[in-house]
Length: 110
Length: 308
Image 1 (cartoon, rainbow over the protein chains, first blue to last red):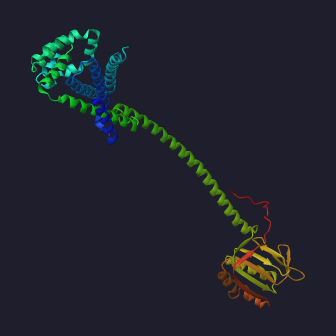
Image 2 (image 1 turned 180 degrees about the horizontal axis):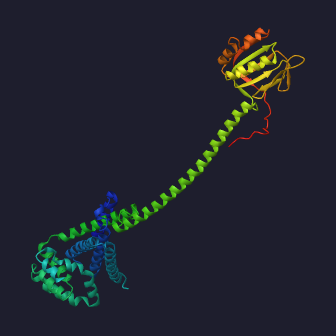
Image 3 (image 1 turned 180 degrees about the vertical axis):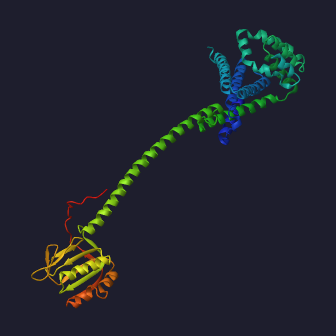
């Protein structure tokens, strides 16, 4: 519940301050957000599984964001940033789907 | 995978790869019965906290769920130390950060239509497209400008030619006597004079740059004096000018510079002197506006043709 409140607080902060994205972060921010979403869904699933762990969640969250941003950065340096970020999004999307499917099984038994 | 764990072993982030594998591990667990696997690490973990990393590595080596140890270690730790785990607050911070960046990203995607977040090669492609379009449109503009130039210059040329022709026709009409004229000049009254005196006066006025002339008789007849005009003494008094009988005294209207013409008529031995010697009289009035209303029909030339 506190986690949901924290998420809402972040959303409110973003709405209130309405900052502009620095140009050098522009290619990485969407990927990082998707990676963080993946981590959050993984955390929700772990919670439902009863195996949620604070430390693991934090570490997976941060590492997901950093690794995805790093992949996109390397792709940009190699000149295949667009394709590589697409690939990262696909992989993260598959994982999110898997996690959501598990959550669904937990919630609806189906 | 195991290399990274080795390198990260002395650091607290040793669970990083394990966290990465979280969903796959969960999938594995889903396939296999949970309690049997999760039970085993829980027994192990309470032994010692510092050995957690070793545990992690050993377990991930045979791809067993590594998170159980990670999960059980802090729970055991919190049991011992009785204070909120720092990871808990970190979670809130991270979630707040996620919401923040989510909103920021949505906003920035809303605002610009993807151009600011577009990649360099896309931007280059868009730019080159726009430049090609720009070049095409510039060429179009040049073509249309050239066409407009042609058309307007044609119109201007026609207009100029028309104005010139109108001006010339007016000039020639004034000279040929087909157009009425007005302007500053003299009104000369000739009394008791012969046709030769009238002719002299007309010649003198022409020499003094009188431009348009008209001769009125007292009987109301008027004759426009042009290059081909002639004056003959009539048998019963008066004169015949261009076939029209005029009775004296005559009124000669002339358009030109009044002072010059007056001087020309008054020179010693000139028109005024000779008329007065023959018993006639000449009176001259300067007028700021003399109206020459008499016109003649344009004479079609029968023989002469222009050279060009």
